[in-house]
Length: 383
Image 1 (tube, rainbow, N blue to C red):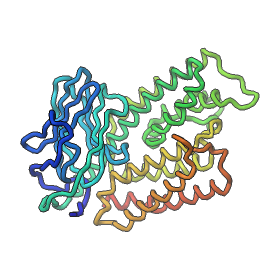
Image 2 (cartoon, one colour):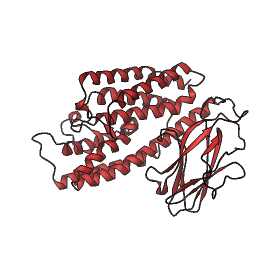
Image 3 (cartoon, helix red, strand yellow):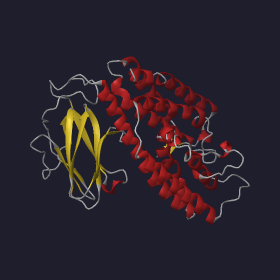
């Protein structure tokens, strides 16, 4: 098996040899392209595997809704490549450079939701396809992938916020509580980006303890307090809940709209990854973020996932130039995830107030162990 130097820009362009077909009615193109036929309720890919290198997906929209097509990494979160705004009857190409590994192919009818996904495997590249990577190309690939990831998380945050707001405003507390932590994970995965909008962050995510005199208490934590009401607390009226819910949707829409115009640099990705671990250290592992719901470990998981996505997007820039740092980051991310997995409970986690002091200290030590090598990432990728 030939080892690829990086997941992007490592291969000469050449015809692809497809080794299989998932649907006999959707065959591969003669030039080696992988055909994708998207409809409003299906996503048919002509094969579920291809050799590593340059992959070309020809995406045809046979549905009535605008569609999107993604190639996702094996975590289902990281976007390797995407093609957007494929209108009904329109065909568009997605060209990506992918190394051997496991992926997901996904169509997103209506450009909302998790999409219709199927497993996609990239096998070893054929001999002679490996070429030297251009560092500038690797940097651009990394930032393009992260930009797409931020947009996707913001879209899912907006969709989840609308569902949460409706449940909260109508007094469906059971549903609102179920949606609270899982929806906030989309915010927490891109927290440094969300916080960069200084006018929206305090409206949407300010904690009561952080408010200055005269500040209004709105957003997620205002709703949190009303759902997990402390003793001697007077619940909001229906009108007050509606105002909070409307404000959350309105301002999250603004956040999403602004993310569509963002672009990033490699140092911003690396610094953002470190910022996310700092968020864990200062707010989540201390239990200060979710004062009333105690859902801090959901935030912890999301912060760590966001940091790992940024690192993985930058990873090709480390391979061959700082393999030692790359190996240390891989090891420490895996170790910290293992620690956090001990507290999983069903689809979520134990509540923070169920952890012992010793358990919190162990998690904090794991965060510190990852923060140290992560602090070296920026210098390593901007060489």
